Length: 506
Ligand SMILES: Nc1ncnc2c1ncn2[C@@H]1O[C@H](COP(=O)(O)OP(=O)(O)O)[C@@H](O)[C@H]1O
Ligand SMILES: [Mg+2]
Ligand SMILES: [Zn+2]
Image 1 (tube, protein in one colour):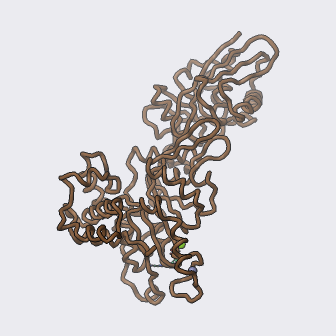
Image 2 (spheres, protein in one colour):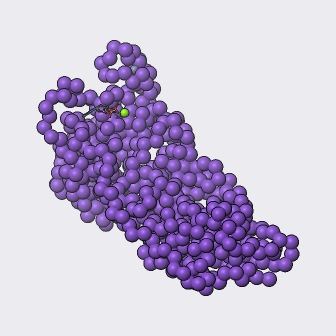
Image 3 (spheres, helix red, strand yellow):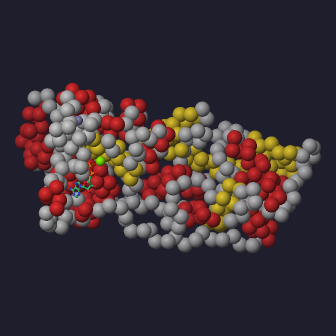
């Protein structure tokens, strides 16, 4: 009779919980059962672990082995428990001492030859281990850099089960995590590439300053896609907390760059309109994986050619836009992923997508209205900025243009505006104008006088604006004032904010 236990971590969404992996070895028919809500991959782990142990030069105990993962109620997915299972079995057989691993979480998938393979979700798993008071983690070498982002835990990297056995048995040191390589400078397209297009440039600057969702309408070639791709380049870098959140989601998706895994720039995702629901909002068979919506957490989600997305896809965004997270219901239970995105919709005015003024477009007004109508209602209603762009003429594009402002210059103005907004709203725990509640806007300290909101009241009276629309215009007016370094919006800001919300004549 032998018994041993080690620790690992189970993930549910980005939340991790420490799991005890225990092994009982008893006399009886040789074999191994794994219990504690294993999914299919965990059952397969049995064969993988056995091969890995044998190919690491250890003998597989000829006993009746029961491996149990506790707490039993937690769903446990994937192959990240292999390493812990192998060590628990060897320790239960008395072949490997676990004194050096008592305060450690073991994370990693085993290859049949005993190599330790990288797994997804190491960052959130290590965060959970640290929170639970574990002092060490043993992780696959390729995941060591992301594990090392977590303060307060000692990270030991291993390439093989053999290395871990030698550490446990003889104290042969495991590798420290590799030094972090410097984060690459912000890459991606720059605003300097966009000639003219004052209206479009203004719209994304205001969107960045206030965190406003944005819709860009206009004929093909107007520069909608180009502008949207440059929004991340003028957003502030992620703070420490946001960087860890974003990196955790990308860790689970398996999209972290090795070496410098911490994501410091707001991410950008532009799923194609033919993308599956799983690719868009998350899901998939087995473990629910994050989709573009969560990969864009704290960054920008662009729905290019937005009316081409299915109704179902567009509808599925409403709740997460409200809640900042997406809940994915599946047979195994509910998984949630963070999903606080800045949404950008881009749309041509009609389904045939012919250039403005081209005679070939004979879409009727009704067809045009129906096309954009797919976006209307609850989705468009949440979008503070709705602008129509006209293409910069070919003549203007080839003419000598003065140098355009670069992203760095605009980003500096955006950062100042953000700081002003964050200071103003600190008392109501909001950082961006887009997040301010209607109650705060109506508070006597912040309510704008009629002399400032005159244009708005006329638009309301004439039925051009809903009550919700009214609040959105005010929020944008605050962003305009912040960009201009003024304490409060004036009538000019309100007029421009109204202009920035006109969109198309639907
Ligand atoms: N203001 C501009 N400055 C420089 N190039 C532009 C501009 N507007 C459009 N272009 C050119 O036109 C192409 C199409 O722009 P794009 O952003 O794809 O338009 P849209 O998405 O509105 O159809 C771009 O790749 C770029 O070469
Ligand atoms: Mg486009
Ligand atoms: Zn048309």
